[in-house]
Image (cartoon, rainbow, N blue to C red; front, side, top):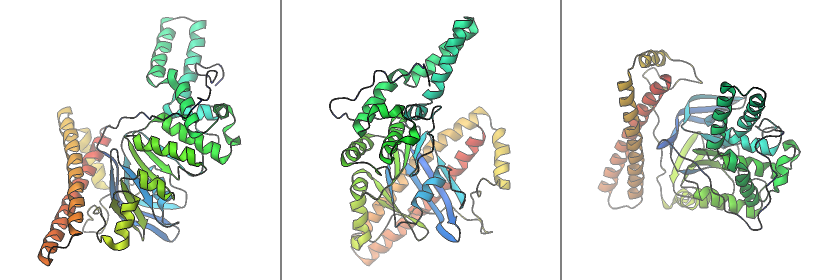
Length: 396
């Protein structure tokens, strides 16, 4: 980045471990919604007509045998599926998010191929810093009102995105995760697996998005770095969806567990220990989010891979004619539906907990019917959320 406003001149490791704090703010009570997802690789069907929701602030651990599709599901959620992956249905992420893949991106994501620029790119500061330098040079050559205004606007964006605190934040993050700060200036592709993993984690923690989607975040980390990362994610009030084979990490972090296997997403409340308790037969009912409705012709109500259904095109045409008052009404209803979905999920979890204790055959039958009714209600709410969200999205 050359002679930028940001340098590593004042960064040095702290003499003692630092706690990591992560900024973020989430705009919605629902952060991820998956509807009627079917995922295939070759002749293997990984998921069939799976639906789920992830709420704001939830920490969801994805578990299952190797090869069941955990990483593939994540890649579909972030819209980065491999070339051999075929999928239908829909997955939406609301707000900002960061994705930590198992395989790092060659060259990083910054303007320059080093860890420093890669981390700055999490907040767009690499681009802002470069633009500021060019605007400053231009202002020195021609101090016109236009050039001064451009520099002022860019400098304000730089400040609002935390540009002046970036060095100190990166120093704390590097110290906490056990990475020498000077390694951030090295060519990012020259770093070892453990060093690169730490740089990628620093970028995500530095960004502080609404949702973090992490594929094996503890790979290449020593025990100290794992503990520091775990503490940071436990204190982070945003949403986390993660894949991990570290049972201790899952148990401490997860508030829900999604088990991927046999073409389904089985959803369990609680941490990994709670999941095992239910899985081993001491409870018989797993939380299962119902599927969006299927039309009488047998086709999904969700378009496949972005294909436009006639109904979707008609909805878009209608949306463009909606006035501001109607739009506000739809936005208000969307927030109401999100709250109703959260209440419906809580009621379903309560019903399933009650079913774990046998009172009588009649009571079990009543509870089962109540559970089916509540799941049906949730299905309707999810469908309404999809329609409202899709219509508002087409309206820009």
